[in-house]
Amino acid sequence: MADRSSGWLLRLSVEPPSPHPSRQNFPSSPPDFTVDSTDIRDEWAERSGEYSPAYYAYYGADETSELVQSILAEHVEQDAAVLEVGCSSGRHLAALAEAGYSDLTGVDINGDALDVLAETYPDLAATGSFHAMAIEEFVTDVADDTYDVVFSVETLQHLHPDVDWAFEELSRIVDDLLITVENEGGDPGEVNYVDDNVPLYYRDWNAVFTDCGLTEVDSIDGKRDTVRIFQVPE
Image (cartoon, rainbow, N blue to C red; front, side, top):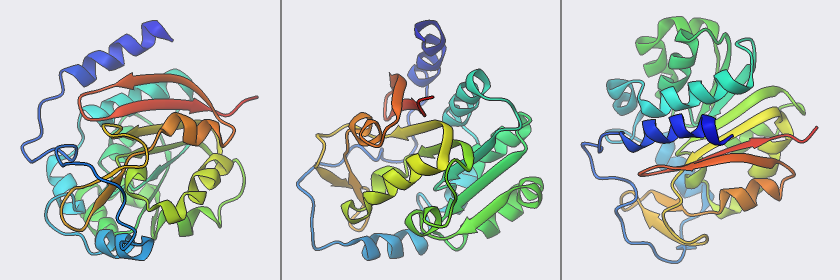
């Protein structure tokens, strides 16, 4: 894996800084248990402005989109069934569609996400399968091993500890490859805030998904996020 990951690391290392404050530049603290999973779902469901679907549609595909595509190219065929959890306006899935992947599914809790996706990426909206609902609601109705690939970009880090059980569900519905691109800049169990209402929960994603029975086959530390690649054992 070392030779392959060197290319991914290069792309991460040259990623330009965000024009907006990075999600990791906030002091971390113990979790605020007065904020529950319903509060967080409501915040993301109504999100506008920064980190909203329109925000991500404006910036479009980025280095992370390219990174996800390169990982898939090395592990699965283009007819692989791919699920992105927290797809927002679909920029990463749109990049996959442009690269030839045809079986694409996305889920996002923000009600505007699918409207923005349809306006920004009409071909993707017409050919993909998209669901406006919480991740933890979506996964419970999905059959085992439905998706060849499941991936998340800075999404799982916002799930409240109350719904940690959803990680086991994600491991259940994936048949081959699970990819996390999440901020691991703090100690597991700590939390910081994107703004006053949006907590980011630090977790050891290796421990989370290996405890669910997956095997980590590679990881890369980037400027903001850590990329982890897990496979389902044969």
